[in-house]
Image (cartoon, rainbow, N blue to C red; front, side):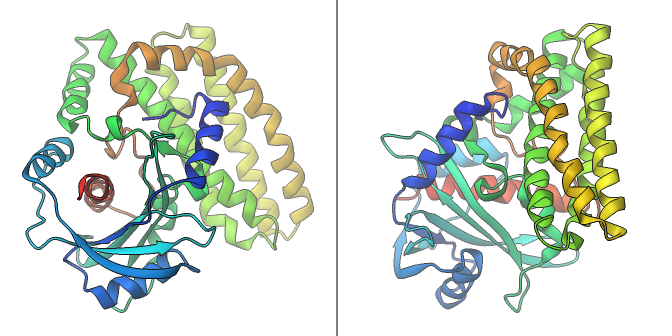
Length: 347
């Protein structure tokens, strides 16, 4: 997993990743070719040059992906592939698959730019869920925002995506039993980095909404306050911080949470100008927090290399949101990871 703690490096890689890629778009056998073509246009409006192909997974790839995600992988009928040009003129990969979302199945679409010889990273461009009529289910938008490069500038290492989920579960068990200081610190780093990923995603959505009347930001901003609250609580798990640092970390998170709450109140009252002023001034608090803690967390992340895995495990490197059950979120997260790996491995 490429970590948000190295902001300048991540931004550079994100830009490079968007500029490159290969021209293959996947749709699994769960979705028909006609459905796939129509949904591709909804997943990435403006795509052109759509061409269909079929590819398969080797037994080795199936076993490798199954070990990574901790569940079976089926690709008996091959994979329908669409070659397209993205709206920005890039090439990439898309897959669609059916996912159980509690009392219903949804069609999940994932668009990525895969690694190249020059850039060894994966960028997720878009994740959307569609109902049986092909309409986007907006309830999942905040949850999906933490995965995608368009909204959170987050990119993934193919090696990190292949680290078995059992490795993380073993570390969680050790941390929970309080028998391994390294395990507890690993979990703290993993949570903090991925809370910051969610902060980046939701803040971009919130800030973007302030360009208009601001009404669209309320849901995202309210979710952001919950994320800041969770981020502050991770300080008590980060035992490599002393008591003064823990309190300072909590204060930074609490200040940010309070600012977002004030923004929501002002937007609801129609005072968009004042809301924009607070949003602009929040950068000072963010910069001070990063200056104080970014290097410390980054150092611990390098020390505990498991923290660089991309497990897509809810509550750890995937942040839960209100309104969705844990089972539904985990089903969606696992399906995203699995199908990204399928796109990378299919030949």
